[in-house]
Length: 277
Image (cartoon, rainbow, N blue to C red):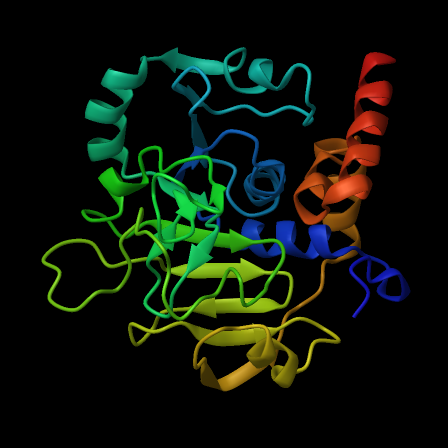
């Protein structure tokens, strides 16, 4: 399947954003991480189309945000800090916003196992000399053991990410005998949508043009499949108009689906276009 899905009139980043938007409900508070434009675009789309009362908390400035603005790179802080209703600081945000509002959050793991345990620490068994040092766990080890509002997204589905055994555990999944929390609820990738209805990763919908065999081949463990497996509903015209013209006209969301030279080229183009605004 072409990553751009050009014959269908939408790109894979747009499909992922729309699937994220469909998880947004009225009254939700969503935690917005750093440098996650796919999630930011999806949450804003969900607020516009499904849940006008949804609010965001931001790791940038620890602000509580009701409003939104177009995405960018150079001035991304203004989207959250500039529109904040209140700024609490990290300690107050962790002590007050997390327990009271129980914000939902999309995490992007480097590795995930069948139970939904996450690794964002390092790739390789030797912590002191790993094959790759990852960005780190942030607050994931603090929140995943005690609440069940974790959602996951993986822009490029592969056996490297979906591993039978992950190298380190930075986020807790659906492990037996845990007393609190419940592991991740939902996962969106460039191949399909998944949940953990029975404590193990389960495919609930495959994207248009993606075969079940392809998803199994790119998953490093036995994958459960829902009895009512269906095809993911594509974006509609209004979804695409909002994403392309109002929410993310600079295409920052596409950065998370690309790598190498293609990502560098797009980044330069976004910076050039943003500078001219």
